[in-house]
Length: 223
Image (cartoon, rainbow, N blue to C red; front, side):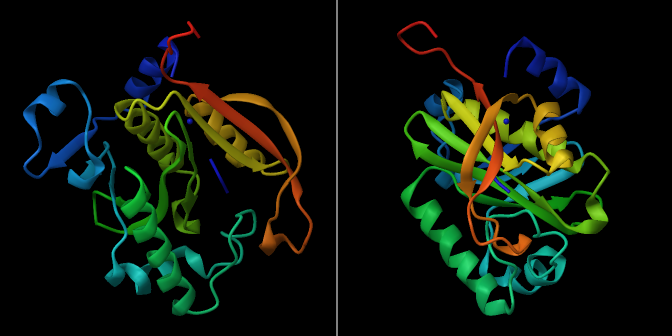
């Protein structure tokens, strides 16, 4: 699934008790002061209960076991359920390519309490002003507010990168994900017809999706 502030967003941050902690290596003090963080220097992002970091090659076995090979978890995702760890290695290749060509990319979600891998999220830069986000969680992590916590963190990360518009989509029938997106500060904008193929749902043709978006920063024309 592809998955996103107004003054209400600040209250949501308090509600989720999120403290975003950016660990940096040799960061430029001027860039820190301006609130901009080069993603090449980003090590971890921490929330109250979660740690988010870039995927590594040695994460493959845990990724495969946690959710990539689970047909129930991947049913409403736009990528195919992994049949072997070769598929998961291909995801690491994809992730590395994203991080090499843009300031953001996929992030894995771990619990702070026991360092358990429970999911993935991230930001995909589509234009200099627009990015998309999303999430996936292993089944044992459903229903505990982790998705909303991770998504609110992605909103904050997008703001730090001066993203003007953050957007997300989910299948029209995926009510739970729609609720997560709304709780995370995104607004429902409408239905996109025949938009995305969901290969694990047994349907070969593009499906309708719900579109959510948020304008995070004002631009020169006065939006």
